[in-house]
Image 1 (spheres, one colour):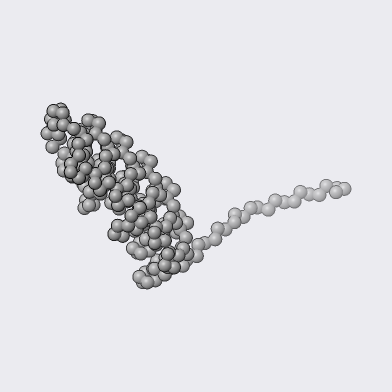
Image 2 (cartoon, helix red, strand yellow):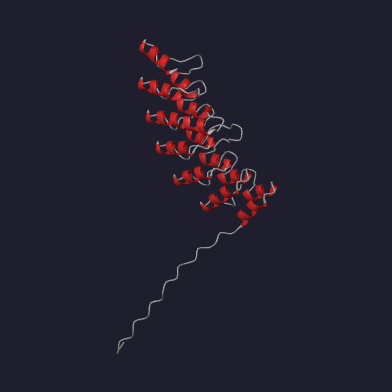
Length: 250
């Protein structure tokens, strides 16, 4: 209710006062998806609300918006992208992590939102920033490229690689993004990472390789991809130069 919020602010309500779980009005607006969400956030930003105050979960308004998007529906993602755009323009900290150690870029990759990933990279997000805690299938040390590889998001992976993501960055289990792509049977992602120079022979902390993991799961197409030798680069043939004719007396 942007109109009600405006009246309260005009009456002297504190723009940064927190609830019992440390949520500011801006954080609540970022969390609750509703038809007036964007207008409420615009109002709070116009009132110079602090864009980086975190709640008890360590989530700033930006992280709260990204973590609250769950369904993946187009309208929901589009609204979240607009919210993120407003917060980034207000100088939201793009490298801040929540209490689970996840930065905004990792959340955006998990949501599969290409526009959001692009915005975060343009705002200066560190492409190789790692998660500092383990949660579900997100291992400690996972990067945005790990998450894109696990979900088979080729468009996002290409964007991250163009931003110089480390193709062989390892998580706490010694897994690179290639391991993630193999484990989730994303053959096109496997090919993309191999083309980007991923080490197909790398071993994880248990001594397993991408090929051995693909074999365990019976993915013959990926096994063939991993065992296929890279074609050697053919040296370019240069035309031989004719020897200069010998001069008389030489």
